[in-house]
Length: 269
Image (cartoon, rainbow, N blue to C red; front, side, top):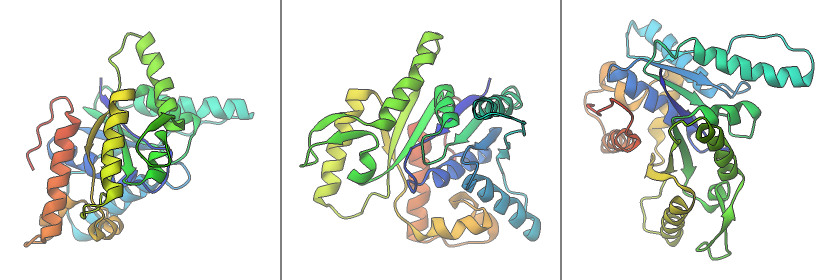
């Protein structure tokens, strides 16, 4: 059975698709068989990222390690209730088509609350939640006081994850390994940054997640998307001297893969 990785956060712009693409491609480069699903059926950012990669390889005559993209199968539905059940069935069918042949299945969820996203969270063995280093984004996890120091209570996304954990517990399955990544952390020592670090650490103990390093804000991520590339592909396309920024970004990815501690995975890039 494939290990299921879900990348989720109910707020857009947190870098879910960038994290998804880099984690999936890193696993493919290490020789693991990995399938990816994109549940944002409107934007399909991860799906387009992979489509860009296939097209770039075709044009350049390259053969780069690439995850297998699995679209949700079509399914006719009539009433709204049938449509809601239909998308669940499409998700189960997509996972079922690859779970016996893949080492990992990575699911990129939309930046909003949807039924299919909630179902995907309940299937997660590993849950990755990228979080911009901002109290605006932190509000999806928990409410804090006006000073940004004390946690007043869990918020909507944390409550959704808690609900997703219950079916696994009732089925006697291992609990979800939930990792929250602080993304786009500023390089300067700022009061907001220090407060975020403290409050995230407090919340991790309170509701049960691990914290991990995300990606700093870098122009390179925006430049890679049109060609479907990741940081690990730069040497393969002829980039000989990596900039200090690119080297630092590769180290961030290496640290992220180590933090995830996925079964049978040892970062060797």
